[in-house]
Length: 146
Image (cartoon, rainbow, N blue to C red; front, side, top):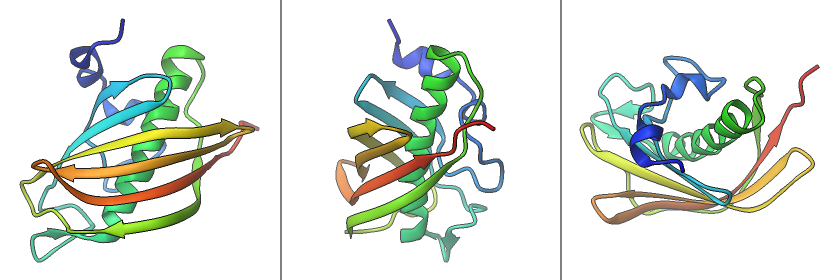
């Protein structure tokens, strides 16, 4: 059984094609067939931080990278294969209610609606201190290895 502690011990860089300074997720905290959760501390040196606030595009990228962490976990720990590149195929019904500040911890939950032929359709929700900051429906396309 996968525990939160075992997930938190995974270096997120092992699951993502992105590297610093473009990593927008901190720790994987939950994973199952449909739901993936990450937790991220907003840092001052983040490229999406301006005047101490993490921007809306950063929130969208955080949701996309939570999807990427899910795909990376499946590839590495279940399918035993390498990291695949993913691309945002579509963002629908994006609602940004607020943006976190430096030092805040955001929790991002991605729930898969459909996963077929290298395309993942999911709902993403970002929360901070129990308040919803952003919601969207996101489509991620995964590039197959050549």
